[in-house]
Image (cartoon, rainbow, N blue to C red; front, side, top):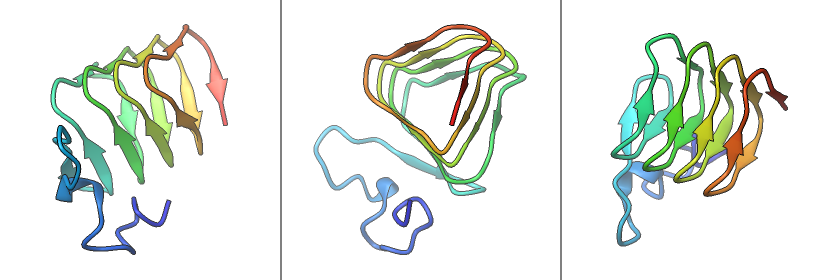
Length: 97
């Protein structure tokens, strides 16, 4: 979480130190990699990292969490303070904290 808060600068996700990383820093301590699909109604709170090829459906709220690559998140999901690994599928109407 210190990395997402940028306490470890210059070692932060958007430095893209590892080969293949393509993170971009967005306002609100949000890091998003390329090829991420976000629905219009999803809400990303502070300290969120989202890996490449991840799909996030409608009415999803994510805060203080790391979401890996190739993750599929269904509608009406709430995620707070979680680490979701690569390739995970989260079905609709789940709450993870």
